[in-house]
Structures are given as C-alpha cells and as structure tokens.
Image (tube, rainbow, N blue to C red; front, side, top):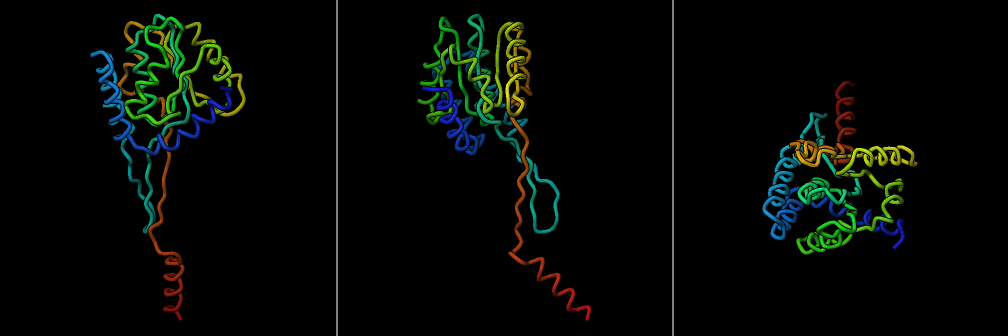
Length: 230
C-alpha cells in the first residue's frame, strides 16, 4: 500500500472517530484494557481520566442575543506513534491512548523485535471497537516517508534524544503545516507521558457558533424599530 493510500484511509476515518466523542472513545479504550497487563491498564485509565478532566469539556462563551458560542477541543488529525525497542509497552500504550482518546487517528510503527507487534495492537483495538483506518500498522521502511508527508499532524516518539533531534529536523524540513513532535526520552520515569496534561499536546482548540434566531429575525426587529420612529 502506498504512503498516499495510507494517508487517505486514515484521513477518511478521522472525521468519524473525532466526532464520536470522548465518552465513546473512552469506552472503546477501556474495553481494550481487557487484553492488556495490569500496568498497561493503569496507563490507559490514567490517560482517559486526565483527558476527560482537561480536554473533554465544552465551554460556553458569551455572545450576542440569539447566538451561542462554544469552545471545545478536537483531534489534530493523523499522528504517528513510534518507539525504540527498549521502550516499555506501558509507554507505547500511553502514547496510543492519549492520541486516540483525543480524537486522532494513528499510524503505529514499532521495531521488528518489539515484544508486541504493531499489527497485534491494531487487531486488539479493532476488536475493542475502533473502526478500520482509525489505527494502522506501518513498517519501519515506511516511517521516514510518512513523517515527511504534509498531512501528518504530529509524531509521538519514545526513545533516544538523538532520534528525537532527527525527527525534529525532518518535520521542520517538510512542506505544509507545522507538525507537533511529542517526545519522551526518559524511559524510566516517563515524565512527559506521565504528565496529567499530556493529552493537551494532541488537540487543537475550536469554536462553534450557533445562531438560534429565525432567518430575518433581526432585520424584522430593525424594521419595527424604524417604523415606531415615524
């Protein structure tokens, strides 16, 4: 499958997954924990709880009469989740959960000798309720081309500082919109992945304006006001 086909499939799945809502996505991810170790289950729960606290709520903002304005968070698009062979599965699960619960689709790329294969993770998540295209396994020889693709919203990487720097240079050199690099280099303490605000790195803020007045309502009021003045 070509890189463009992979991107197209992921992009097509993104809107449905992003519009599914936090509650539904969290249910799917918690269902996934039935297939994980206790430590990984705890990481999924940690990410879901903090995403609910920090990014799931919709805030109502003041606006003119007859109009509602809402501020909410949405997924950025398609993320790559990748890690080194010595990165714990707990760290990878944390990356995947944060990216997915916030409404992003994911390409997962893991070393050939990683204890759990990327395709197995995809199978687990699809069995748990993820639609096809929401999470996709890619090979290591596809990673560089995918990172350089302008449609990729960001890369979540856990591993060496040198690889983090190389990814940052590659993302900076590509065309299109700036992409987010979310890296974890302390594989023992996981201060980035273990942060309560980790999920904020995977979202963008949006506003929704709803006009609840009847069509022409304001114009009618203006006309009535003008008539009373004569």
